[in-house]
Image (cartoon, rainbow, N blue to C red):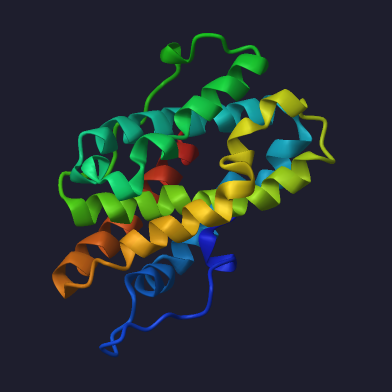
Length: 205
């Protein structure tokens, strides 16, 4: 999953001279982006069907568990975030069904997840999940040259032609979070989300 840092726009500044939250997140998580990308090792996963399926199984266990928590967070109540449209575990379930995993409910679920019980924390976590759709476009292009069945690639195509629109919409909401203490919470939760995902992927099969 190529991290969002490689495709984000240049630094944005607020009218009051402060730095927009998007840029604080980008800077604060840059190292974790790189570490997660190394853990995902996407070229290795795309080279072998079993490795690809393993990656999707792990992603499902993480995304599904985290999205269930986000559903109960204040962010899910915001109409302008369109949370239900942003849920991604369903795409992983579709792909896994095509790879022979008909009952995803039996897959292990991540337990060591960040808390998302306040709005700023939820936005920090969503930054990680939404940013992954940008890198997903790059992976979708790599999949074209792979032996992975086309009907098992839904997750990486995410919003399709609407990826940019969905990302900009999310960033618009994100950058409304201007209070320094709320930004601090969002940044801390983004870092915690990256750490949680990496730890989950590094667990033995």
